[in-house]
Amino acid sequence: MRPIDLEALNDTFAITDHITFVAGPGDLTIAQIRNAFATATVSLYGAQVLAFQPHGHEPVLWGSAHNAYRPGKAVRAGIPVCWPWFGPHPSDSAKPAHGFARTSPWSVLSTAALAHGATQIRLRLADEDTDSALWPYAFELRLVVTVGADLKVELIARNPGRTAYTYSGALHSYFTVNDIAAISIQGLDGCTYVDQIDEGRHKIQHGPITFVSETDRIYLNTTEKCVIEDPGLDRRITIAKGGSHTTVVWNPWIEKSQRLADFGRDEYHGMVCVETANADGDSITVAPGGEHRLTAIIGVEPKI
Ligand code: TA6
Image 1 (cartoon, rainbow, N blue to C red):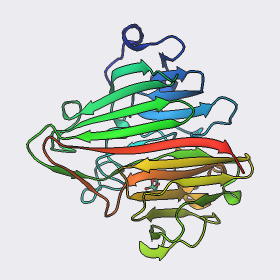
Image 2 (cartoon, rainbow, N blue to C red; image 1 turned 45 degrees about the vertical axis):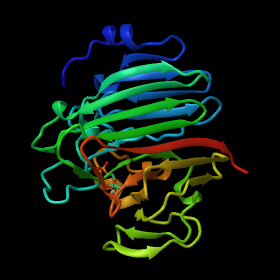
Image 3 (cartoon, rainbow, N blue to C red; image 1 turned 90 degrees about the vertical axis):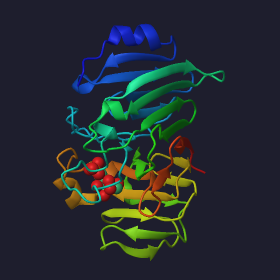
């Protein structure tokens, strides 16, 4: 990975009382955001929001203590950007799971202190920065992160070329919970889902989602806001979305998490994924000159 000049980055993009750039774990370049509303960190590697914590609240996003933070390896934390395919590559198992965006070095387009006190950073990845053997299309990705009382993350996929391309993807958000066995997720009642741990069978969600074992589901045809009800932390995490008709819910539980190198034996207790996705039948085709915007808006409020 090309060396990044922190001094030059800060000279150009640092903003007092909003954003600065530092060397993070594994010497990854991290944008540290602190404003009147919250703190957050964003890795330029993978354009990955690693942390978000509104003042007075516990951390909202979860991260494994077992991450390797080395080039080429995905970081299991915050909001990995899965693009241009969700899950395993549809035809070539040699290609990285969840695409290459989350293991590529992105560049900073701009930073801003917004009128109402939020902080924004815009990051970019384009075909000239990646291996065309992985994805033979002209493309430009932009990730816009806005940190205020809520966290807004927008993934914009553009097509500067002459050939349409079709992709799948997700903002693969990991959330901190007190105890996976005590939470529930509202918002998907009545929804059809693909049960990834039952041979992809289609099932119907009845009531809120609760967790008693490995859970890996793609909820179909839904634009609904989800709410994680967490009695242990006495809070609700809200995940609203745009540009997405599928929501993925995942907890690896015991056996799966023990098979994952970057997942601690007991870490599954304290996390859940609610992913804002374009997955399964919700692939997106971007015509030449066009774009698609996938948006997640994450908030936290006291449990009622
Ligand atoms: O969250 C859905 C999922 O596709 C799960 O099946 C699991 O593989 C998870 O993503 C994590 O994937 P990763 O490649 O980050 O280990």
